[in-house]
Length: 231
Image: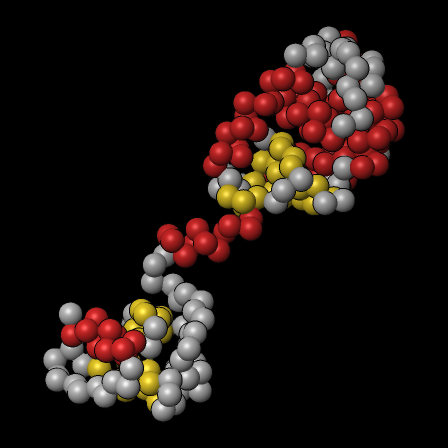
């Protein structure tokens, strides 16, 4: 698997490596990353071009080698295995390499006899083959900007971030175990304790589920809160 995007995602596919270059994100399966890493350690661009022997797209090969992050860029010579023009477009190049890496072992290829290597080629149809695989990746990946919200939904016991509007900030416990049920009422989802906050008198009054508590109300709004608690 080799996918690129302008938006950052959190992959859910195991063994996925994420690279970044010029605000472009690249998602590679660990097997492709490891092979690219070994090729980059053992070969230069020129020596790998000699072994792969690409027949076309030499300018695109050079462009991809300069623009893609390491070690992904060492795979540039394999773009030349496609019979037809591949544009200097990062999505198109990554899509082609995705299809090629899925079809053959890029490390093993260069160890084969020259006569066999010269028989390997791909048609321009590989430019469309990657699209379905990429769609599956984006359907299962999580947009990075939404990761916190989804983690919170998956783990309801995690501590939420709460803004206490209209309450005495100095009296409210300074942790995120407390959430605001309604105006003037806070609830601790860990201990089960409920408190009524008197914003006018700058204090909080504990409220027990089993004890009768008389709360002096000074306006209709606090009467509504008291009805809510008694309910």
